[in-house]
Length: 463
Ligand SMILES: [Zn+2]
Image (cartoon, rainbow, N blue to C red):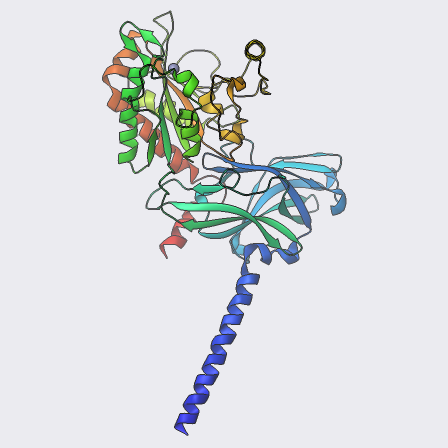
């Protein structure tokens, strides 16, 4: 009997195990945050373009209101809804800018390139994304976000494969995107897992300007290229001590006869190096020059489409920790923060150069960033293009890459100013420390941006 009982128990045990296995398969299929929303979906919206800029994910898209029984007048707000599970508590929504023209609603996930969904704040596991429209009557319409980019995702050049920045006690995490079944539609899903940084992926790029045959600005015996290299090495050291993985675009061993302007786009040139690094932030270091030696101060240039936060953090820390002042030059958006886009004159000049050399000038507008260290490092996000497709230059292999580096061109001071020169030559350690603090401050701030809240995230991860 005992043998029988034990046999029966074993048989029952096996059956229970099999049932458990089947249940878990079923549960995991229904349990995915994308599939779990299937019953609530009212339709679809289409993502026409998506990419990352720095630590932010950004999508632009449209929704056809005619099939949804909605008009512009009915809609009160649009939000990106993120779901990590199927409970109420697993949802978070944040408002996104939108406009309606006729029956077409257009949306983007944030006003500025470096706002909105910070990928560093995603929980490990899957996060499904939806567009949620709120009606004036208080009702909501939930739309799946389908892929309307028209490009096949085949390789690293067109898929998002993002690595988070180190923050607090967190190690790195890897975020990839795909479109997954949600009932009859597919929606955007972020997959987040703990991961080491691959060998070729970095957190931050430090880019000492000029080099080789190009000395940059010169004042007496001082060359911009040499001074920013000294400072750049110290900044890189300091950032590494703070726990970041840093890529230095040149270390002074480059051929002194090489024309850096023509090699920026080589495979090992600063453009392809920076874009390929999948770093989140880049600091391009430069010094100003003016015939009037009284002109001085810090000017941090940011992308036209970005907000002021990162550049402001750099300018503020430099002014607080060194004898450098904010530049008084006109055109700043806040103290020490500037941007430069192509002027109509810049466009005319570039076009006439293209005609002379016999190549087609790439389409740029007065909102295109002028400095290549901002434009090209930002890849798709900043509308990167190859400088006039000049055959003397190489190619930016990453100009349509969906992962842009948030870059600031840091004019640390004027080499022509006696006042600035004292600091630029003799207080480089303080400059390096100030820049590291600026990076730390900015990254800490990223974790307070809309999106899944860091406090919750930290609590969950310690469990
Ligand atoms: Zn320069």
